[in-house]
Length: 283
Image 1 (spheres, rainbow, N blue to C red):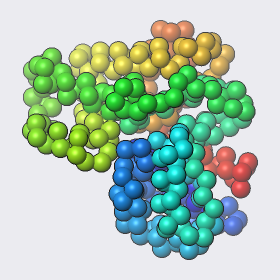
Image 2: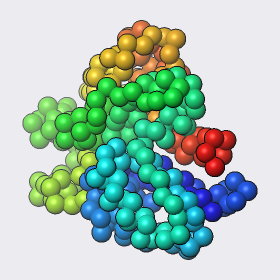
Image 3: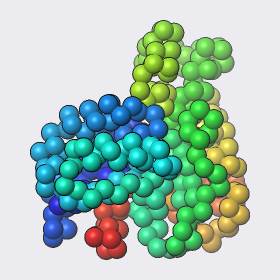
Image 4: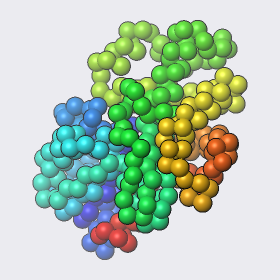
């Protein structure tokens, strides 16, 4: 049995295939970003998922694509965790950007972008990914991501830059106690996921002038840092992956046109496309 996983910081989608490439299991766990979640918590999130532990002896191969898996150290941490559970499996770990490439463009040149809890992009020439810069994560990068917008919302609220009517709604929806926020940001796992949780507020208020302006500004910054430097024109397909991209597709498309580009497609979750790619090209 083969296990394929698309892992973000907030959640991981898992699909198991039998020897005939037929889906036998589909399950979702909490995020497994080894760059921000400690080893013990990574282990707990998998072990507490009965659907996975129930078939752990049957898994012979794992293909895990995850946020935070772009450098050797976090890859090694996650690999040891997976090996301790799936003892009979050969384990392959790659960054989530590669999953997005496989799910969107297969083997055709395209610009691929991720806008979810975090953000990233690459140009895929049909053989290799080309990155503008390595991702340094939620503290100084991740433009237009969930955690990026979460930080802005919190700052605007406390600096009283948020319109009063929106601030009132913000207060009603979240626990804005200072000690609670500090504990989640500086003492608990997944501070990026915590910040991104505030971004869901924008989904329900995206027609408000303040929210719309915030989104447009963040998306334009993403284009400036993560798409325009590739210097590709309208002839190059552009794909977006992730919930932020999915729910703000209309704004993305307008910003793309403003930059003389066209978005080819927006996919909320890449797991199905990723599995199809594996069936045809890897397994």
